[in-house]
Amino acid sequence: MEIRKCTAADLASVGLFYDKVVSYLDEHINYPKWVYKVYPSEASARGTIANGHQFVCCEGEQILGAFVLNDDPQGAYDNADWSTSLSQGEYMVCHTLASDPSLQGRGIGMQMVEYCIRYAKEHGYQAIRLDVVPDNVPARKLYEKCGFRYVGDVDLERDIPEIPVFSMYELNF
Image (tube, rainbow, N blue to C red; front, side):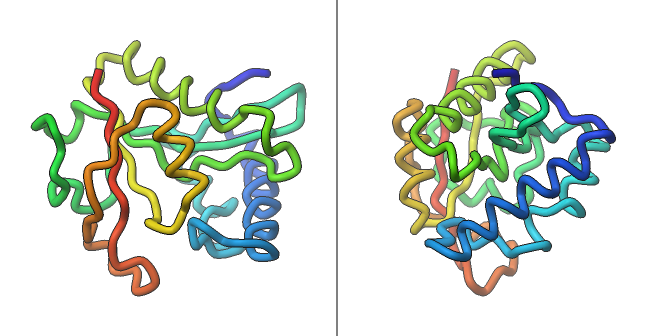
């Protein structure tokens, strides 16, 4: 299993991967409230690949998981009650983490989160922060199992009527 940054050549495959995940969620429980062909999608991945922020977890050509890792919180992260005062640029944010639903239980999500932690430490960041839809119990359990601490629910001022607040998590180094 390899985790690596995506290249432009990965765009179509990442788009198909996210389509597969969101389609599955729509047929079961769409915990993150993602929207098929909107977010996450090939279109949303295009920018994150171009910026060097899109990653994949793969075995050979098969994508097992994907996520975005950068230092852009994409919302009012200052509204959260963080345990440590850090400025944007001093912490990384993990977004859009997903694993192949047909491979659940293999620890792919945990391996991707552990990669994010190592990557952030190696690049001199002081923490990882992230937000989760409050009802996204699987994601919350994963992050807590990986050592993240819940700091409360916050309005990130993203203007998403279906998600008025997000559950905030941090892992300080």
